[in-house]
Length: 523
Image 1: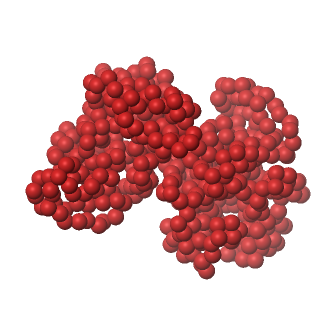
Image 2: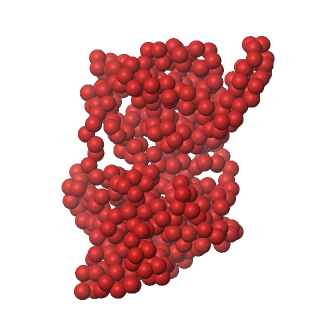
Image 3: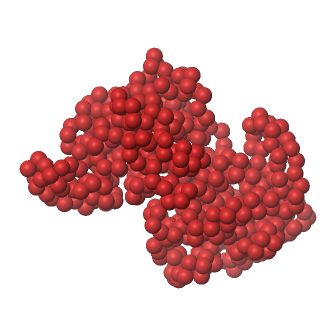
């Protein structure tokens, strides 16, 4: 009976609100892909300066789709609209077209001067300022960056076309071996707007920064012969390729026959549709979360009434001046979180002094090799390994133990000056013999997580025990309201309650106090 119960506690998660299930088959077949942006996307004939929108064209078959690059150098969202460039674009948009919108570099300029007068108010609020424009001599009401993006998105949607918001290209500005992931907060504001407006979000900033850091400071500098912002053809093509990879990860995605041979050769970044968060403010310390659907469920929007606890930790800490970045992905194990690149991308965003909460286990119990998920890990924390021909990827792979993957994350975090915190996997809603006591796993993932934490002298949050004790206290009737499915994924109320447990353990590490209670209407 006990072995059957433990098995039930850690059966693999099969349905993660659409994240790791079969891809949607719907395809987009636009007649035209438009680009609205600034000099980092605009087309040029200069040898030392090219925007990504020009090489982007070569990734598509001109017989099946037109790439119309309307980006213009020196423009912000405000001046792109004020000068009529946006209206000219929107007049040509037809139903089903795609419009990629990328601004921010010039929005940080002065709101009013006699040279450019192109700046917008920071943020995505409803604030505005009335000015007499020193450049035009006319009265003008200037709004926030978010206001102008909202206008563009609304007008694209009114045409029954598809707006796609992209974060900034990367500037060649370094601190040590790390390149700037900015500038400012425009990437985060673009991410926020994508969520608010229901549009796809392309995190071009972090994708490009990851590649440029692999090249290194000297090789990256060669791509920017003009200045720190503008690259030549090779740098433009690097950014264009990453945009294509991200477009392939939208759901629905662009039809394959729209691409040229060059475009079809680009490996897709299959997770664009999940809209994983980015760092809100690079000046602040960050708390990252990595894990499975019990940390961030599905698309992170509560569909099917299911939420992960990582979305609510900040609420329990009174939204302090600390970034909370929930990079967990449903359906993944410690192994596939690493092999699919999610760990490296999250790690690349971290800075010394940041904290990363690590919680895996549920999906590690899956099959080591199959043609569906191939996500299982070898049980325990030993040094065993098994080489397989992965039936899902078609690649040879060496699979390690659950503990080995945790140790890898802990070690790589520490090597960057990041503080790792191991969390045992949360319990499922399984009651012992219909009693009022939640079943606890034995000799399984919670204990293995604790052992890795002890051996590596890593801070440990025993969520399995803490949450189970909380459920015991509340009883079956109240706990039923905390789940969005039969026994695995919490509802908003359950996610908030678990987040409170995490926050109480995390607060001393951040020097913060926990608020008394968080409403279910927190998000």
